[in-house]
Image: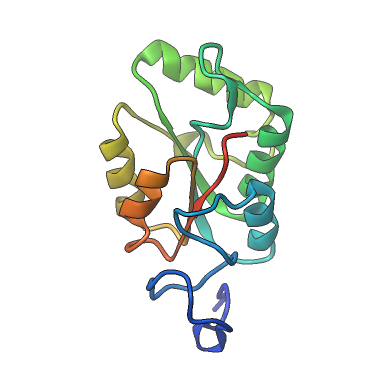
Length: 161
């Protein structure tokens, strides 16, 4: 059975008290981890992941993904069982987000259209992540990371792209 790592061979006793395995050192809410580091660490591991897209858009009015963010989303879609979450407030916003993902070619990289999820509140995002029970959750919101960290083995705060 594939596993991210052996939890008995952890090298340090710092960080959070999460009982899950760590993919990247430095999870938690204090210092953002580069998204590229999380993407690289997930390669070759059989993991489920959730990623909040809010904070990865260059422009949340036009819902345009930066080229770098699109590359990272595509890499995660190829190497994990990825679901993406976006907080938005209307069906029109949902359509724009789908168009942005299509323009960024992330569906061609393996992101399943059925795993593009939307919610209208931060609390809804927390509930969605907790119910999916991913191995890894990546988010730009420190408050959300703090609330799901006790329930998700690897919760990573990333900087806005």
